[in-house]
Amino acid sequence: MSKALDGVTVLDLTRILAGPWATQNLADLGASVIKVERPGAGDDTRAWGPPFIKDADGRDTLDSSYYLCANRGKKSVTVDIATEQGQEIIRTLARQADVFVENYKLGDLARYGLAYEDLKKINPRLIYCSITGFGQDGPYAHLPGYDYIFQGLGGLMSTTGHADDAPGGGPMRTGIAVCDALTGMYATSGILAALHQRTATGRGQYVDISLLDCVVSLTSYLAMNYFIAEKTPERLGNGHPNMMPYEVFACRDGHLILAVGNEAQYRKFCRAIDRPDLYEDPDFATMTKRLENKQRLLPIISGILATRNRSDWLSLLRETGVPCGPINTIPDVFEDPHVQHRGMKIEMPHATGQTVPTLRSPLNLSDSPVQYVVPAPMLGQHTEEVLKEYCALSDDAIAGLRKAQVV
Image 1: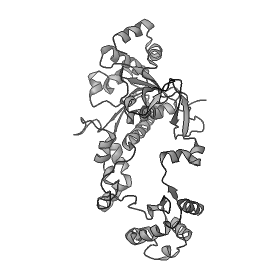
Image 2: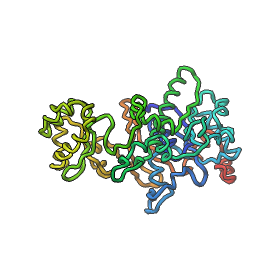
Image 3: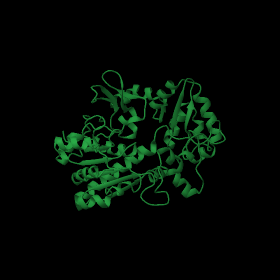
Image 4: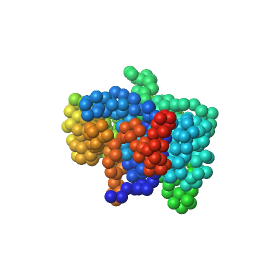
């Protein structure tokens, strides 16, 4: 069965999460992704454990679950790009690649003759994507940074967590590296757009992706609220600045998310809890009025929902078309019948001889579906294969490179 990106070759010089997330998306869509790693060490996240994948004898390997989450569908090649021979290998691969993705610090690859200006001379059709913390220019461009830094710098942590004057209040990061994942998705979009334009122009181009840019874009309606109202958005715990009721509520045996987004849903909710007076009251009749009178309405709803079990409310509210849901643990997620029906957890064979679980891609294409054949590779697993196919090197030549610790 054909894949959406059949025939597209990606040279992947990324590590950690944002870059590998982008190139895994491309691999899922059918691109041939060659992941270039440091000899003997590889992607930093290979060592970010425990947990680690186990071999056939039950012993930990050198590959962590963190590494596995973002590197399926790729071939791993070890190359020391600090050497002249290693740089020439990268140039040879780049001549045949459609896409080059890297997340080195600003200027690092230019020192090795592997910057965009260098590689476009030998492959004008190359799409070269650089993923950095701060972008290619500006006063912070030279600084390093991880996801956590950008959650703070980009404003996300100023709006995440309980209010400063509430118990446990203060800034809070998200539970996952959301800036990295978001940046990987934006990088994928930029690369696909450049590939599409190349079909018309025949030319590649440079794609500059910054974690800070991406997280600032994520502020979306909060930024717009600030632009329009000139009021600084604050942490609201589980509440929402533009909708009400849009909160977490305690039931008799657990918590429930109520997400009422319009007046029709609010009326349905009031009828479901047998309180039509709550939408007949002019103080609660519109979203604007409910936000104005939130401190009066919130304890009324809280008191009602606390009288019954969560499952009772979920059944009743779902039947009446009111958006609601539980707060699941990760095990709960994969026991959920709908998640199971959608097949979000899959199993893949691994080079260790074991079968490893992974998350499937959320991309569902009817004519070119994602195919799960190649798991995350072991370090250098495909070095010889790639050097023979793309660089036309003999066994003796590869052995010489190994002896010189180039690969």
